[in-house]
Length: 434
Figure 1 (cartoon, rainbow, N blue to C red):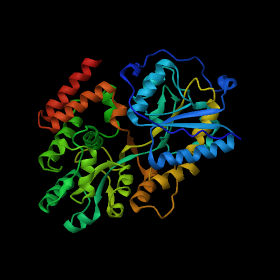
Figure 2 (cartoon, rainbow, N blue to C red):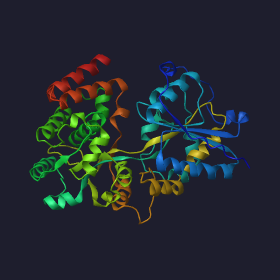
Figure 3 (cartoon, rainbow, N blue to C red):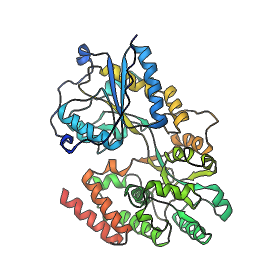
Figure 4 (tube, rainbow, N blue to C red):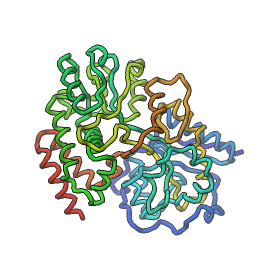
């Protein structure tokens, strides 16, 4: 039996010289894992961006996998930015690990074009029982030209979290419509609370607000139609969404000085009891239990993002979904074994452990034990009931378009441009890029 060399490396940013561009050149010509098995070195290397309890669960599974398969597993952990840089450099050099955690949509497309990852369709076809454990749309964000290139192991969702104690004290109900939300904002302000806390500095938290408004006004397909050039960015769907975001700002929905507050500062507004609501991903549950007052999670619930008058989006359409995926490098000498690792880590048995011990949503239809926080149990139970998903916009938009959108959104939020100017300039930029 092999002894595991457990190497957990926290990798920082690479130097600019190591930031090699992703090109269309394939780093290798092999198309199946079996072709490389003769060169197997008896070791699987995994690059991942997870940390904390999730990483501990991957380590635990890796130890079990080593025993079962008599193989060494090396896990290299880095933050998101470092993983992206390492993958870009590896795409140019061909020096990939066996298994790579990466991001879907516009992030993964260049790597697929560069022939960096192995299509997984044959593996999936041979493991129908495994696929039955996954939610229906698990492969959507990792399918290119009809082929699946990665398997997600988490499924974060963005929801409108709120402090139940504050809502009860003020005497308001959860907002079901945008008008309800505006009314709740007014009542909370009058009672001396910050209605909603948000990171106004980083760009992406405010993008979650805009994305949800687009989903409610135009449905989950609107952003995809815009990216495809089938719906102009200055369409009424996007204009109305920009106007509604401006309405919230003008109503004083967000904390004073929110433009200068980052995510930790915005979270502190909620955890201190100053703010009543926070639009956030399901990762907020971990932030609460690891904070100064772990019991706050027992006074936290969430509601669906409010619907809008005249909108076609449903309250059961959510932002987020299957994400945090594992892919196999095309040149891996242990592709078959790498698939067994991915399949095992995303099995219902292991996914249940990950969910329960890290309070992370998984893209599996799992049943968790009853001793979890009520808000987490509710989220797990509701996950299979959602009717539509929009993954995060930075995975839908190209990097260039996402940067332009964020700049224009920030200008709108800061009061430097109007909603009409925002969408008009965004459409002009999109046309210039065609």
